[in-house]
Amino acid sequence: MNMDRRIVFILVALAVIIPMLLSVNLPVSVSEPTQKFYDYVEALPAGSTIMIAFDYGPSSLAELNPMAKALLKQCFDKDIRVIGITLAVDAPTLISALIQEVAAEKEAVEGEDYVFLGYRPGEVQVILGIGTDIASVYDTDYNGTAISEIPMMQNITNYDQIDLLVDFASSDTIESWIIYANVQYNQKIAAGVTGVIIAQMFPYLQTGQLVGLLSGILGAAEYENLVGAPAKGMQWINVESFVHLLIVVLVIVGNITYFIHRSREE
Amino acid sequence: MDWNLIGIWIAAFLTLSIYSVLYQDNPFYRFAEHLFVGVSVGYGIVLSIYQGLIPFAWKPFEAAVTGESFIGFIKLIPICIGLLFFARLSPRHTWLIRYPIAILIGFGSGIAIPNVLRANIFEQTRGTIEPFADIYAGTLTGWGIFEAILMVVGVVCTLTYFFFSVEHRGPVKWLSKVGIAFLMIGFGSAFGNTVMGRVALLIQRVDFLLGDWLNIIS
Image (spheres, each protein chain N blue to C red):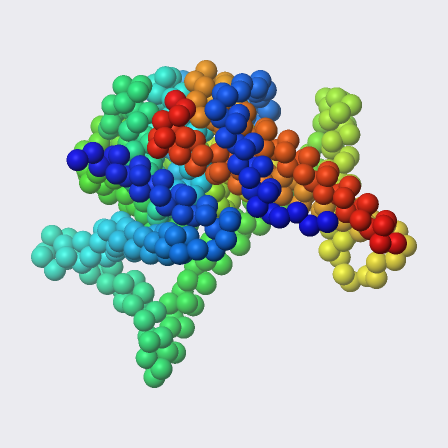
């Protein structure tokens, strides 16, 4: 039996649209990797510095923007200073807008509470360069202000002054951060990644090379829940559950139909 | 003129154009696809010039020429080596490309090999064995002990599957079969997470269409 694949597309569309219109709310529990991530940030004292690498472009906004927003809110609430950078060439405009949106909501001051340094080409060279001197890689921030004129960067030279590095990644950049920043400079790293690469990241969590891990839209929902700022992550994971349910049903129906068809042929 | 509104309508049109391929291939889909590729490449090139070429090559060189800082002249060395990549355009001078490639491979290997070995081999081996020290010390729960043993069984069996120096017969065959089972579970997990990621992309676009464009949801 062959079903027109467009019927599957319509079913998936309905499984997304109907729960979204009805605003269904399902409970969200918190997994251990997300809890570890949250606890580590929560334990940092006010005045600490986190470097966030927003290593994703428009195609991964759906999964990574919600968790990035939740972390930024937590940092600004706790007076943790944020240095934003990106290794993705198509990210700077989007990330700049994202940081400014959260900063405006939390009344964080640019240059004092946060700074966005933008993009520099050469993944490994950037990671290693930050270990020597941030100013050797980023002489200005994204707006063109000289790094020597930014108040919060006055006492920050390299990884020694960064308490945690967080990589929000949709590709293998997280492995580069681990291989060069963690191994060479002993930098503590946490990660938020897309569902596609999450399976590759768990070994690093088990060994402690990652201090915490957020997995896709589920990780975003869990983190929003912990931070106490429910937003798109929690809204979308509810819809996601209905689509997953539909896919499981389709897989079961497909297999039953296949076996019936095969037994009839025999 | 409300540019934000115009932006939302353009984004909605392009989103629907891309999803229209689910019905069948059509000119709207091809227009949106080509536009995406063109804009992405153009944006990438412009950004690489302004965030890479100008601050790291042009400005230091300009400063050296104007006498501000002579360090720019030193940067001429890597700039010239980098320009050798264009030697490929001339059949007579193609051999010159070997120099920048040799430097890149030399630098890349030298910096990567010790770090990769430590991050992906030594640390992972330590992570696999370390729980047994906790078992010996009596600090692991029953579930923790099970996890530690399962992990070692998984690692040994999966490595056995990729061990081709002996014929897979007898005990080796069964170890490798267990290894295949672990691999299948790994692939299943990766596939499930991939589905989650792809569905999230759809949800975000539907959220945009129903919220920002049609204002049906808040």
